[in-house]
Amino acid sequence: MGDGKRVYLTKEQILTDLRDGMADAVDLGDIPELSGDELDKLMDIITMPSRMVGVEAGMEVPVTHDIGTIRLDGDQGNSGVGIPSSRLVGCMVHERAFGADTMELGHIDYSFKPVKPVIAQEMQTMEVCQQNMIIPLLYGAMPNMGLYYTPDGPFENPGDLMKAFKIQEAQESMEHAAKHLTRDIVWIMQRMMASGADGVNFDTVGAAGDGDMYASLHAIEALRKQYPDMYIEAGMAGELMLGLHGEMAYDGTVLAGLWPHQQAPLVAKAGANIFGPVVNTNTSKSFAWNLGRAVTFVKAAVKASPIPCHVNMGMGVGGIPMLETPTIDAVSRASKAMVEIANVDGI
Amino acid sequence: MGVGDPMGMPITHIMTSGMSGIRAAGDLVARMEMSKSMRVGDAKNYVAKKLGVSTLDLSDEYVMRELREELGIGVITSVAGAPKGIAAKMNIEKLLDIKINCCEKFRQKIR
Image (tube, rainbow over all chains, first blue to last red; front, side, top):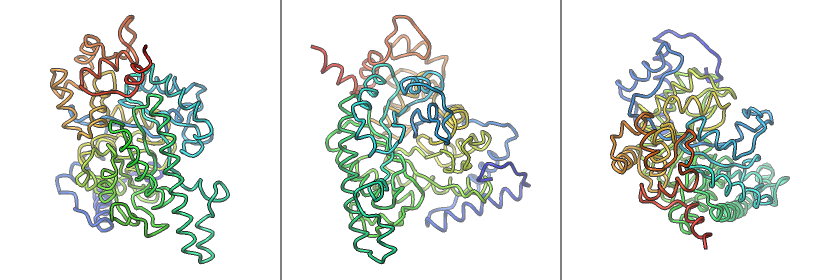
């Protein structure tokens, strides 16, 4: 199930769920269906008797990471396993023990804004990591525009303003927050680039709605202008760009209501090298329903994207159950399906 | 990928779909995707041509283990005296005909 619980379904039930999940994506995104062959292949992948599956030889793809080393040293009640270790150790474990193709360095709070007071620490950690590592090492953080609103930030909370029917004031608050977020991301990444970072990973773009995406796209644009060779990956927070502002646009396109295949060209236009499409998992539906839906959305995004797509496949996205210890049989099958059917360039 | 415990998330994805990083040539293919926005097929072709191997060999530990040591682009196990860290990345720059930011910064600091 979408929450990770093991259930037993007949072949007919699995096929029905695959088709229903696919149909939901087709209906919402106005995108093409999977072919009969692709549905058959999905069915084969899901019903393989082995615990783990793998892509066919030659179809392997590079992987990129969100959350950095926090999954090793994090110990705050999430999926971190609380191993006391430095971030250098965490990065090197990923490179040399896990066989990671790339890695990212991230701050324990993992949003851009709280990096500002500890920027010197981040810069020196990046320098030390770059001296020791060989795989590409990005600096990763969440734009997380919510931190710019009261009580955490300087601008009045748009939610409170909207409740008081102050719609224009709410929009203005989002516009101000977006400008500050863009400025902060650029400021932080200028310093990380001075410290030898390969680039940046924007994790969960749009988590605070269209203003969050607006700010991120402008930060990407500014960084690309200043650093033509910088690696920029932008992964989304959700499948649908929520229109909290409703009228914010980039390159003439209103951001509210965009689906993954519509988000990809804008992220490329801003100057990113890699786009990370997201499809949310419905915990009340089966793995087959969620995977059929996710593969349909992501296949359309990969086709529409002018840049490589590394699909987001953490817990609760990309067909993967919403569980801090994601079930290996489901992760493995979802991973294979995204590579072999959605044709992703990476995960 | 994203959030999840190490065994359930990075290890499972890498075992299922990944290119094994410096055990094989995953880091090199990733660099071409990220430095030139190459799609995975183009990135693999580019790297394979530079290495003089087939694209299938890029995920083959047997082929890449010796080749990486020979080219000085970093190996996953300890080899005394072999280029590591920035030294290995400087060799990767030459091999792939790209610039790597930390190597540029390193060169700027040498007087």
